[in-house]
Length: 60
Image 1 (cartoon, helix red, strand yellow):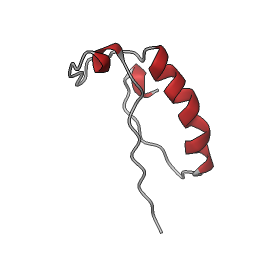
Image 2 (cartoon, one colour):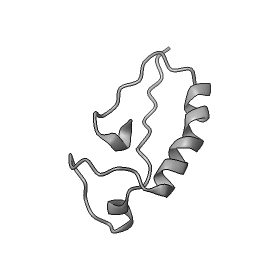
Image 3 (cartoon, helix red, strand yellow):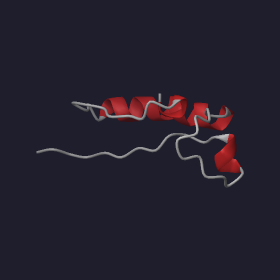
């Protein structure tokens, strides 16, 4: 059985300002980096067979 998990990048300053980022390479802010640190073990525990991500810094 294949499961699809969609996980969005963490917070950026543009998110906080309600600005649309699109493909603009806006990095995570302090909150976004903390969200990413907290998400890492949760996602790892799901044991994905593959990860597909944007090439933007905020998704790395």
